Image 1 (tube, rainbow over the protein chains, first blue to last red):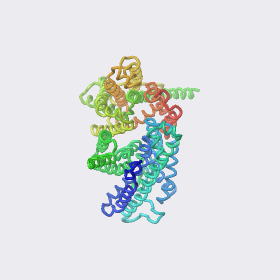
Image 2 (cartoon, rainbow over the protein chains, first blue to last red):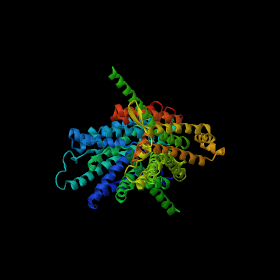
Image 3 (tube, chains in turn brown, orange):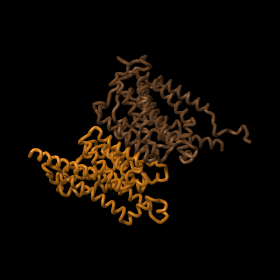
Image 4 (cartoon, rainbow over the protein chains, first blue to last red):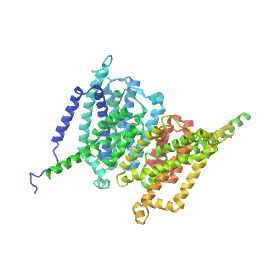
Length: 336
Length: 303
């Protein structure tokens, strides 16, 4: 019989983790008082990238499928907002989200239906090819999409028109308000994803990732699970696109182009795709990395590429993976 | 009706030109896609930097041609510079494989894809660093050959040279893979790396050579297209996607597949530019998606 004092390794308590998450949330809420406006804006971009990477990682980290086409869903989200504004004259952020999410989900469902027939390299190539259909359409139907110039998106109203941003000083006001808006949506996304990956559904995905044959013997309908994961993943990334465009004020086909998908992959890897928090940290850090790389050098891609190669060579588990390994080593030394 | 006859002749000439255009385009695309396919077939790596290697072939050739003209070299000799671009890329490939790719053969595919994506980012900026943002052209090579008349329409003779090089490359590659001892080694390694190694093949050397040959093909593709189209930034990224479409249609790892895929993509694209320019690219991607659904391994794929 097991001694009651033996620490249960498999069922660790979630309390410290929840406390840490609550603390992080409070820090996020207090930060704008401490940092300047530009940093608030950067952090907002970072949180949006984190949502995109979080969605992406449900496929890579939890289902074992590397998508090189997530730019499609980000772009669908962004262009949906631009179209709603341009053709239906809708200005409400809530409406953008309410209409944009089903459209992103629908696109993900359609793409997923085709893509989950394959795994590994073919899955990656197929997601890439399909995402480029959207890219070429955005580029060629310029009278609808604005072509390479893209579409401008004015500042939306928040909270059902309660907050609108016009006139002098509205930029500062918008950035500050929008930051809190994104923080709340971000927190909801994190909680939602946490529930998803820890649900029986999430466990089934991980079982499929680790051993497809065994999962099939257990009676799991593998393709259905992969499809559902694809749908959820694409929808999260689509939401990130919806949130991104009012902040950026402009959407161009570049966010549908496949190197942008590569950036989402990069972000998830940077944080560590084997950890839940990895893509969140990765999204935020990647955003800083890219912004400062662009600010310091004209050849920022060279810098990013070198970082990526070095990362894959030296730290394949990413920042979070590396840190937790370091923590484990330190703890081991303490015990010894 | 003499009028109708003339229109008929002209239509025929246009048709011939479109077929020649398709073949021209297919030659370049075949070179890129065959290299990509060869590398995948032997090493099981999808090289995302392949398009950038094609771009480097174009830039090196255009740069050499520019230099040679500066030195007053006769136009006819400029043709000798075309293989130089391809050789430069092959050497680059021979350096990349041991340094960047070799550590990853035992790791998951995702990492291989990511490392070549990192390489793509690096190479794209290296090109910008070395040759700047302005297009680099090598027109004098094209002007060295006369313009042909086909049914009252003019067609650059150089394009026929490109078609010839594409056809020669296809035959040469086929001969190397299926009719030489090295080809046997390539195929043996591709079928079972460990068994080939156990039988005494120097697998490491086969990998370097396979990668260098793949890079040579990509570089040659760039080198032969640059006299008719200037080398520009981003050309590699566009080319990679088309090469993906080709190998997806034809079957990743198959040379016949690369040839047939290149022909299909080129003819569809040429027709597309003529008849449905807005959705020309979308149609290509959709064809690729349909092939993957109906026959997942592509038309000629086995794996």
